[in-house]
Each structure stands twice: as C-alpha cells, then as structure tokens.
Length: 268
Length: 278
Image (tube, rainbow over the protein chains, first blue to last red):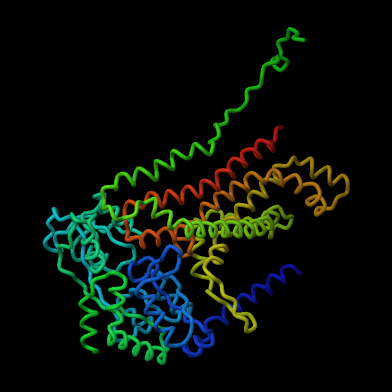
C-alpha cells in the first residue's frame, strides 16, 4: 500500500518533469499577457547594474530595460544575474530579456539570440602601481595578477601573457588585494579602470597598457523569438540615434566611451 | 558520621565538577567588534576626505543587510522543519524490522550525511526546474525554495542519525518491559521509546540547527539574495573600497554570532540537564 503510494508520487514527478519545457508562445504575447517584462541584469557591476541602499537595482542597463518595458506598455522586473547563470536563465525562460554586460561572442550566439547592433563595448586593461613601470602586456609574465571570477579575459591574460591570475569574487576584494600588494596588477574593464585612476585614493596607480580585446556587448533574447529580436534591434538603433546611451553614461558618472560616441554619429 | 573505612566509595570526598569553559557575556564581544570595525577605518582614514567613513557607509546599508539576514533565518527554519520531518521518518526506517526498509534508509542516510553541503545545494539549484506545471497550473520554484530543499537534505540525514542514535541509546529493558506488558511495536515506539528520546535528541538537534544557520550563507554561491550576496553587492555598489571589507563582513559575522551564540549556550544547558548518568 505504502509502496504503491510512493510509486504514484514518483510517476507524478516524472510526468511533471516531461511536461516541462514545452510551453512556448510568442514572447511578446506572454509579456503583454503577464503585464510585466522580466529582465536579467547585473547587480554587482557599477555603473551598469548595481544596488542602491534600499536594495533596488539601478544603473545604465536597468534604465535601458525600463525603456523597453515602457515601449511595450508593461511593468519591469529585474532579476539579478551573474556571468555564470545569465544564459541559462534566458534559455529556461526565467527571464525574457538579458542586458547583463555580456560580451558578444560567436559561441554565445549559438545559445541565445544576441540582437544586432551591439549596444555597448569595452576592452580589457590593467590597473597597476605607477612605480612598477609596466610597458607592455608581456611585462606581466610570471607576475600575480588579480581578476574577477568568471571574466573571459582571465584566461587570455594567463595563457597569452603568462600572468598568474588570482581570481576574486567581487571588485572590492580584488581592489583590496591590489592595495595590499598581493598582486602586481588588476585586470578588468577599461572603463572602470579609467574611473578608478581619477580617484584620489588611487593616485599612485595608472592604466599603463594599451587596451586589448575591445569587444562589443550584446543584449539577448531567447533563440527563435524573432519578433521580439526585431523590436529590440529597433530599440538599440533608437538608443544610438537619440544619444540615450551617452546620456545614461553621463547620468551615472562615466566618461562617454568612444564606442557609444561612434554609434551615435553613425545612426544620427 | 565519618566512620573509619578502607572503602573509597564510603569516603565523603566532594565530587569534582567537570570543567566547563566560562561563558562569554554579551559585553565581551563589544571590544572584538569595535576592533574589527574601527581599526581598518583608521588604517585607511588617509584615503580621501570627501568619502563617507566606513561606519557611515555601513549605516546606510544596514536595513538592507538585516533584510537579507532575515531571509537567511527563514531559509534555516524552513530547511530545519523539512529536514526534521523527513529525517525522523528516515531514522525510524533505520530501526525498522523490515530489512529492505532498514537498509534503504541506512543507505540514504549515509549518502546524504557524507556529501558536502555545497554539492547538495548545487544539485538542488541546477537540477530542479525554475517552475513546473501540474494540470495547467504553473507553480514557480524560486531560488530560495530550491536552497531550502538543498539544505534540508543533509539536515534530513543528520536528524536520521540523531533519531536512530537516541533510540539505540535507550536501555533494552525499556523494550522488554513494554513487550511484557503486551504493547505492540507501534505502541512501544510512540508511548515508551520516543517520549524518552525527545529530550536526548534536543541538544544535538539544536546544535545541528546552529550549524545549518551558519551554512545558509552557502546559498550566496548559487545566487540567492541572502545576506552574503547583498554584502557583496553593497560593496561593489560602493565602488569596491578596500576599507569597507572588514566593517561589512564584520557586521555579518556579528549578526550570525548574536543569533547562534545563545543557541549554543542554551544547548549546553540542556545537555547538562539531560545528561544520562548511568
């Protein structure tokens, strides 16, 4: 008797398991029906997506997501994502749209639908003590270099230039390690490093190397959601045309990036 | 009264109390916290005058961090409830007269008891769907719910061992006496054995709860917005200032200490109270 009940429960679980992952209406219809656009954004990446003291997610990318929701006439909900789960969340349908500082890579295009044109771009550089006198990336050979866990340029820096990567969970830990002298340099996005070198507390540090891997960022929707992708493509062109991205950069205190300026010129 | 005797048992020698470490009072922790929070702020005080002091920054974030901590507590209480219910059943299974049931329960207990908590958490996170549908009804399964399931698995296995151990620790005379009074097995368990077990299980059970509470921060690794995750996000929202690390993580430490230490003290008292003196 008991065993039979267990078997029934087990069978029910299996049935539920099979039933999953079949539901798929047009994303735009689903969003409108739900009355809410669910967007995956970063929550630990100032200024693109970060928390204010009330716990709300703010930043350049959440503001862009809000524009999309306004256009669709629905509310917006932000789901914090990290580099290691953002594509899975989108694939599973947990989020409708992902704007999460993701570099546009060919292998990623096989998993999610990255919308053209790119909305942003950044490159890789290092923050290091001025007196270290770094001249080229090869100077990092054999030196300990701080990085952030999950960043794609960690691998490049260690394989190409022979640096020993010490990866940290967050930027605060990495900056502390750099200040503490645990690593010779900190490899990170160039836009963030430029901002840091202007900070008085970091006046002894510089961004000595030429920026490498200047790579565009892509926002993404699920594969097969062509109507939604077309709409997003129009949105991005519109952002570039109106200078919305330049405006948001200024709002959040970042110097206007060459990429955003060039795109604005191109679509104006 | 003192007769001359050579039998040591007759000597009225005072019994030495076993050594117990003296308790911390709440004020003992204050200097530790003060040192933890103030020293780093002094060390970095030269860095810029316009910046808010670390403690002032921390003050801004405290409401959010407390919210996150409450979430940790909710996860711990729920995981404990689920784990205890399942673990009790499993523990009783381990002493079942049915050998299939017994070996099955033994295997499940050993499997989950000897698996790292974080690995179980990862399994729960990535194997369970984010929503499932029964008869057209879509039930979402949020991350915190998966964290509860993931953490309740090792709790279940540990509770199972606590239950089994407590039942085994009772003198077999209890079973025999009940049998001689014509109690059935079920009556013996419910009316004789388990009531005596409860007080024996309580101290290890509370220990387990304290350990579980401290383990809830593991959920930060799988992206649940609990206190550690929020601390990390708060730190990066402040632009990754190195001088903030110690006060922020120190504050989280203090929260857990303030919650878990009383449990540890109370457990110690219960342990003394229920100590089995045979």
